[in-house]
Image (cartoon, rainbow, N blue to C red; front, top):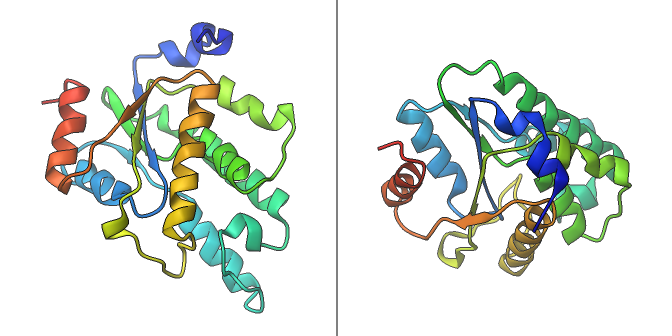
Length: 200
């Protein structure tokens, strides 16, 4: 599928390779990213948990029974803050030394979650997906055996499956080929990623 932003945007041509690892809740994503970091690879960590905790602390009366974009007082403001934060992470990552940096979720994740939960946004809000490009998107599938719900993770397994489908569809819509990371141990998945990216 041709995407003019994808083909011509200069960010994509920079020497630093930017790799997104994404997936719905309870896919084992964070454990793999932490293992990559332990092995010496630069990592940009997820924002959503700290933002959710802050939102809860600011309004203890607010009930967080579902995904935060449905529970916060102002979902539009929350999503804009999340989008701005992911853009800033992307910009800051340009100063990374070395040839590669891994992102725990990318900019299009914001739009995928909004799509999943039926929230609308303008073309202007989608524009950063085309402006700030990544080199590779690694997607982790739902994994029922490790699915849990906690203070910052709200989705049922069925919702996690829906999130996965929307992540895949959203990244493909903005012109990315997707690589599925197969289930396995942390070491097996880390090895898969390193071999895929010729880092072993």
